[in-house]
Amino acid sequence: MKINLRIWRQHNGKEQGRLVQYSLDGVSGDMSFLEMLDLLNEQLTEKGEDPVAFDSDCREGICGQCGVVINGVPHGGQGVAQPVRTTTCQLHMRSFADGSTITIEPWKAAAFPVLRDLIVDRSALDRVIEAGGYISVNTGAAPDAHAVQINKKRSDRAFDAATCIGCGACVAACPNGSAMLFTSAKITHLAMLPQGQPERVLRVKRMVGEQDALGFGGCTNIGECAAVCPKGIPLESISQLNRDLIASLFKHDGKDD
Image 1 (cartoon, rainbow, N blue to C red):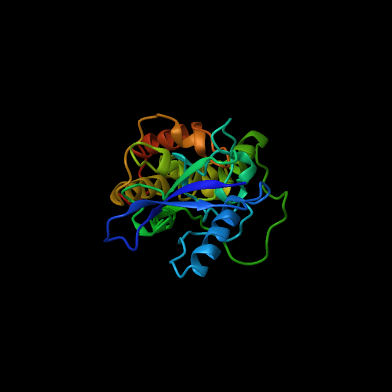
Image 2 (image 1 turned 60 degrees about the vertical axis):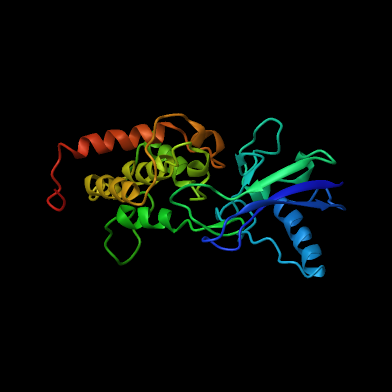
C-alpha cells in the first residue's frame, strides 16, 4: 500500500517546527506504525536526509515511550475508524486505507517541551512520581502473599490504576494540558492498598503540588484523557484523587503544613 505522511520536523526545542510531507510506498498492512516509520527512515537515510526522530523501546505496548499524535488523536486510536485503546507501537497499518494521508505530531503540552521531531521531554511525569509516589516498607524477607488481607474491590481498583504506563497521552489529549488522570492513577494505586496508607495524606499534597508547579493545566472534567488512555484508566480515578486531596486539608500528617 502507498501512504502520504505529514510529519512534524523540528531540529531542536529552540527552532520553529513545521509539517513536512513524504510519500511512502511498499507499506504492508501487517507493519506496526513504528515499523512504517522505520521504513521511512531507511529511505531517508539512503537519500542522505535526516531520519525522523521518535521514541520507542519495548514495542509491546507496556513502556509508554512511543506516543505521538496521529491524525489529531494521541496514539491514533486504530486509525480514523472506531477508536480502540492502543499504543502507537501496537497500531498496525491495516487500520489505514491505501492512499490515505496521515498527520503525525508530537505530544503538545507546556510541560512536554519538544526535543526533536516527535520526541518530547516527559521527565515532568517522573518528577510528579518522585514527589510522593512511594511507600514506606521494612527491608528484609518478603512476607507471605496472604499475610495482609485486602478487599477484592479495592485490590481490583489498585490493579486497574497500576496499569498506567505513564505515556502522557492524557496530557496530550487534554485541552488544558492536565496530568490529573496520570497523577490520580498513581495516587489511587497506592491509596487502595494497606501499604500505601502511611504516606497517603502527604502523598496527595506533594504530588498535586508538584504537578501544578511543573506547568500542567487544571482539570475541567472534559474526559478526553480517559477516552485516549491506552490502558483504560477510568475518569473516576480523578474523583479518588479529589477525595483524598479534600480529606488531606482536614488531616495533619506532622510533616507538611
